[in-house]
Length: 481
Image 1 (cartoon, helix red, strand yellow):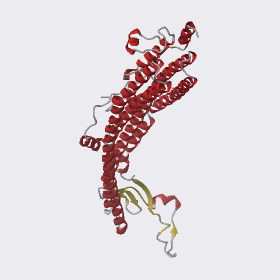
Image 2 (cartoon, helix red, strand yellow):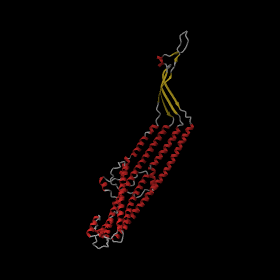
Image 3 (tube, one colour):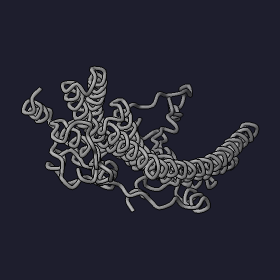
Image 4 (cartoon, helix red, strand yellow):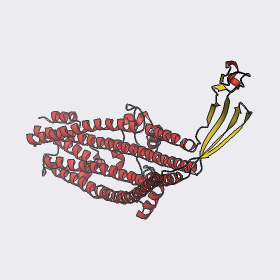
């Protein structure tokens, strides 16, 4: 192949022109003569490898179309929109509104009874018979019937002679506290799902960028292998090896593009938006320096954890049920007042007072015993919940520490060594002492390390969000500081 054809092939392969300063620092010596045309290709490949992204700024570069369409989306906005728009939160608020009506319902008296009655309606009257005739019953005249019977109209009201109404109101108010705590738990779960969707999309986009950059380097290696094969300095096996690696990275990039679109749909759903709504670039969350101490985390969880407040409300409600059952030992009262009229005396006032007689003492004792057993069960469940919460807090804090250690190992040790391995393999290959397989393997290991850093960061952020959740505070607290 002529020098002109070789240079044309190099340009067609898309090899970048190396910077003079970088090329001087590489100090690569080609086995060919100084004017060899594939020396520029080797130096271009080496320059591309040396300029591989070594900072987080390059790894976090969002897609250009998303960056140009809208302002970057911070995690706090995602969480706020989810808490305001998710139907689950609206349903929990509606449940609170319904519970707030219960105290007025359960503490009200029974409706009064208005009663109209005919107390005495005689079938016949005893009128004196004429002299010489038999004394007998004479039927009452029909036209005078309305004024010849006793009638009454009265209002009757029943009411308990105990504090059962107050106890029922207290139980309904405890239910309101329970519903409020449950709504707080629903809100935290909604926020947590939004944080998880945000972190998933962030990871997919960063992994897509990592894979795309690997594909670019794979194209460079495939072009260089073709040049070396054409100049009889390489082998067909090297070219096939480079093409296989390029096809693999290209396929991974296509798959990650689909996964990123899937993550965008899940983030929109988590925010209560249409699944096809565009999602702009994401603002990078902040990583907290260190998790709180175990004592501080436990104290926060005992103050704010909704599940514990639900358990406390259930204990209070069970206690009021015991008081309600005890109140059943007291009788019910009855008052009836009204007006009555008799055939002999005419109209007058009417008053009646009565009380019930609770004779079913065995039934009442069984009701009290049942309520006390339910209270004991609720107290035991609340204690089990406290132990579970303490365990979740300790485990979540330990997970944060473990993920932080893993991230530091990958970012501070694995990635620098993998980059050094790429430079070493590339330099050896450039001077003819190495193989393309070694270069491909070194590049793959570097991008695996870059991907592991991305995933380790996501796991650490997710662990911090879960630590906030088990403490009963918003899951984006540690990531938004």
